[in-house]
Length: 128
Image (cartoon, rainbow, N blue to C red; front, side, top):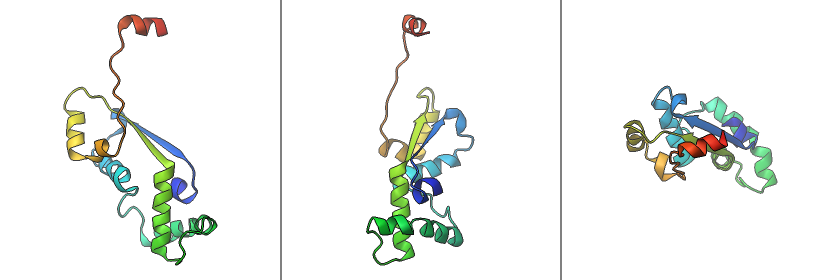
């Protein structure tokens, strides 16, 4: 979050079924997709740090006219939304994806879904 929101670096995070070791991790992804932030990820000292990181870019863009920490943090979250891209590759087979969508609705509501069907055997062999 610091690199995408604070430094303004564009980043793509890729997750597949095997990289989700704990279902609670999907709650953080759900929050990022929905609001652009994870609630309470930063303690007050860290929040001040990220606000300081974005002061110069915010002033260059003519943003945060009141110079309040709340404005700077909102600018930080906005930059994080613009610069962080999340790619998820989940298998639709079985109950796992259905349960995840039920528990974390932003996985569907805040994403673009590309469904890929199984390739025919002759197509796989010709590509190989």
